[in-house]
Length: 143
Image 1 (cartoon, rainbow, N blue to C red):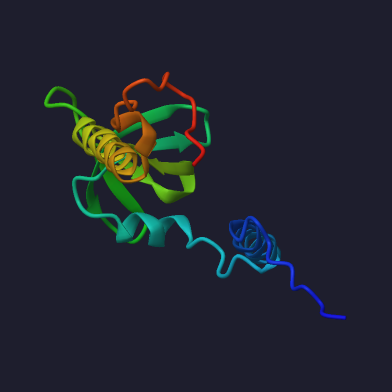
Image 2: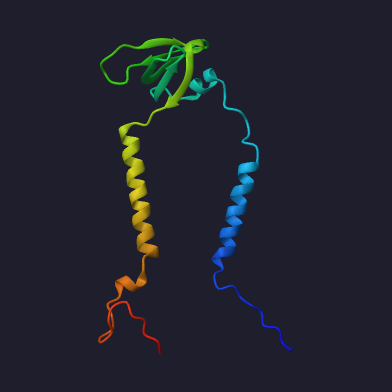
């Protein structure tokens, strides 16, 4: 008796399972090095980068990185009005990078172009073809 080899109808399921397994394994691996200390983190930021600084007192300051020293840094004004403040590292609880308006526009346009390209490449091919004469729309013709 001959054995019939069964071919899976949906080969992408195998790929999907492999990707899910890879993601699960990747989440179990150690994350690597701990984040750098605050002083080292701020020293690595480019001058003029927009940041949000949370102080140990609970005050939140938004501004741009100025001169960086070994024990403090200068937080410049976010807009043209305002004064620069020298902030010591011991008074800082957390620092976050804030996006500028230009960066947000670039991200939005990139997402739009990616979705438009995806739609153009992988859109429904049936939607671009008109129905054959005498065939109602949405009915498959079986030879």
